[in-house]
Length: 172
Image 1 (cartoon, rainbow, N blue to C red):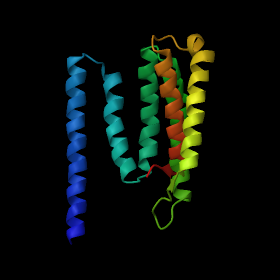
Image 2: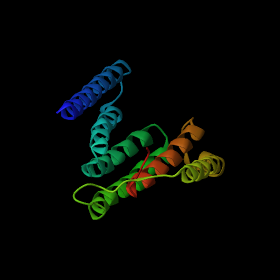
Image 3: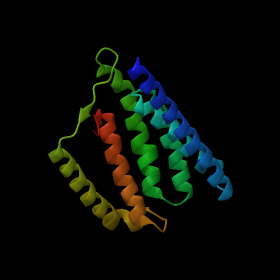
């Protein structure tokens, strides 16, 4: 019984924090005069995160659609790598994950894996090398924004997280 109360309190806290985050996003978007196309994906991300925490595969479907919205938003800012990453890589992988998730389920619960320390180090090293190569080789050609290095970091980091989530890896 005590365990059930703790679970309910945690869910209520999670929901309260998500609502506070949504209110702050809306307030700061208003204060900064952000357009809806730039604010809406951020709000939808909160919903996706709630689904992900609950290991609900709908997160991938909503996240895939949201990735396309992010792509439009990034493109409007001249962050072409981020636009490509979201619209052409993250969205299809997330939609694939929506369909792939059920095949990996056992008794209705998804099967999640945790990366071992060595695998984490390898992923981190590959990501850093990919980030530098992306920025050096393609940064000034594709990206039209002022933040080429940051754009490439978001591209590589987002790609790595999307791939890990798609294949059922979770951080402990």
